[in-house]
Length: 292
Length: 292
Image (cartoon, rainbow over all chains, first blue to last red):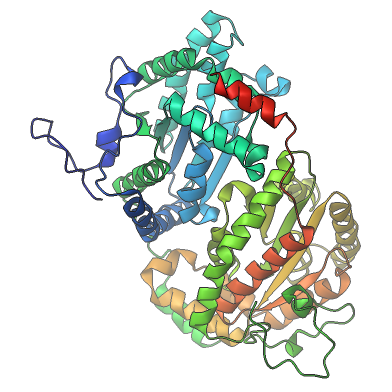
């Protein structure tokens, strides 16, 4: 990883890990204090960033295969990347450019839309549980159970006591995930309202992007301060040591893609999955094969 | 596509499409007549083949997005790539290197293992139906319902009248898929027993590949002629115009990856999905956005 040279001497000694640099510390969260154009942990240009992302490909792919192999041979560990952010913040872009570096056989990607009536009847976490990654798999959620304390809160889809209870329900749920071997990486893709405007304009200006545009996006945009408040509450209330949030400065797409992919890579490296040892007699099998 | 210069003048005029060149013609199938080392439709070297595969990336990605966009806006069409072949023939490799060029959000990959007792009770097509791609999605099956006329036949897992009936059941099922908008591409990854031996040896020689090795692979290998017969029967009996089989010469991994990816690309191009037109008033939305 290219380190940001701007790190000041009086800052706490860094582990050198982007995971530590982008981690939201416990306590109150003020999103306005986070620069959406920052390139924390990276000191190069946009071009450098794209090259650096490509350069992660081989490592990401290798570690992913190790994790997958472990899962195939009895290991129970997996990773769940949760992507949240306002419209156009780039949840799809991260998947396309970051997850796109990986073997799709080891990925399980789920995009959560508004819940159906049948899903609602089962409780907000039911459909989330259906989508959890199996052993050795990297799960990716494009939106998640956090919508149930974001749009549900902002839009009054449920009464305040209901969404208020959900923070604790989410904490219990995520603790259960951690206990079952799932390492959580929750990323808030942080863009400015100005950047969103530019991106929505770009969608309207390009006929090949009209299918991505939804007039309701502007309705949500007009509630920006309410969403910021709801995000802050989610990042404050559900940020335990086993269920950390990361704020990803996302006005620069290249940085966002590089940063999330780097978080995934560092997480895999910290899990340090090893190639499974043979559960058969290698010599005997070689001899057997030779006779065929 | 680089055309094979060896095409003889007295052969039927080619459409220039690999889909036509690798298509199994209706009628009896003799797999021994298919060269597993052929590079049909490609005249370059291994290095050229890898470069050519990379070169498909942008086109594959663009067409995939068009298909996906169509599916998001009411279109019902999708593609289902069925991968079959003996152990080590490269079903996983095709997914890693070919499907790996695509946006994983538009893929749905399912790897079929031996059915569980609960799955068996529901009939052999039940779990297949669960895994069908939705609108705009490219489904990929690593093994499929064909196992139910392959290993089930070779290993006598069911009585002969049962597997015999399945050919017609498969034909009915696949006709139904075609009617519902799914374009089928069924690929038999054709390797020689000699090449399989080399690949199994390589797995045994490399500790990082031991997890992929299963002693049962040799048991299946010893039934090679029986499997060849079962494959021939499947390719003969289930090869309707809407459910075509393609034999992919697969002793050369680079060719196999290029060929299957090219079949996918040509299929998307023949579907010719168009960018959906705006279902909103573009001017009005621009004006609305400008005020925010």
